[in-house]
Length: 316
Image 1 (tube, rainbow, N blue to C red):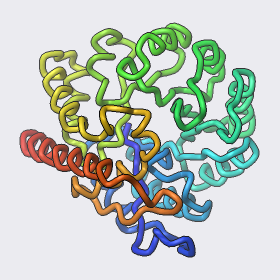
Image 2 (cartoon, rainbow, N blue to C red; image 1 turned 180 degrees about the horizontal axis):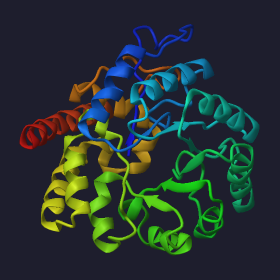
Image 3 (cartoon, helix red, strand yellow; image 1 turned 60 degrees about the horizontal axis):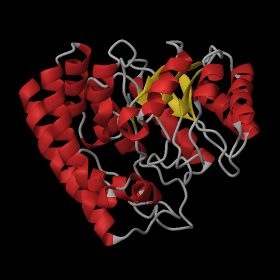
Image 4 (cartoon, rainbow, N blue to C red; image 1 turned 90 degrees about the vertical axis):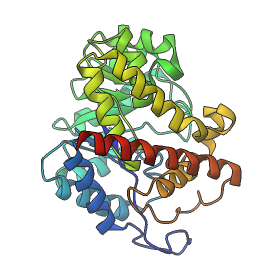
């Protein structure tokens, strides 16, 4: 499951910019990823700048992605806003563009309690029963982790089919508790950089993963996918180790918490250095970042580009 960044046009870093999405680059990136073998696309998460795009930009971007996909893979469009009604209104517009489902983070201005999280997803399901949902479980972005108790209740909502999870590597035994709670009714998707470890422990439950690094080149993750699904643990361990090395410098001093403060900026530096597509400038207010953090992102991009070259030529 590849998560797309949102390419920006020159001048997008200005507060008075408008219509900042590079639609030509969006189409090119979408087509490249699908033709390479990515199975599914998600849009407008954190580094996809769902929080710094205007609604017209969100719609123009998703319209381009959906048309470029042309039904070849499902597109779950990012519909996160600061409240339930706006999320539903945006979801309706994305549905009308042809989105196959919604990628939904809960409102985060004030942290929601368990009942409110469930009611939020249930309201979207009632308003848009024809659209499946991938829930966005990002503890730093949404002021807390979705609990196992909430997962159990979400798994009773037919439209909630999966969750973008962090897997065993960052969540540890909380991932195990969450898997037990959903009891196979929805998929809890680990990050691809932790897919091998999670799948070896739960091979029947962990049949998919998500990656933002596909925008640096999808070949390493696609080879990892094939190894995991064929249960070739020796090969998947080797690829996982290479991916971990490539991404080692992405996290300042090894801290995911510190990375989360500058996620958009660091990922943009990674994309620029990898050179798989042209990301363009950052949008306000996420335009500054410690230089050492940016260099860590660039080094990760350079390392990933080497992996991409190796696995793309190997598969050819």
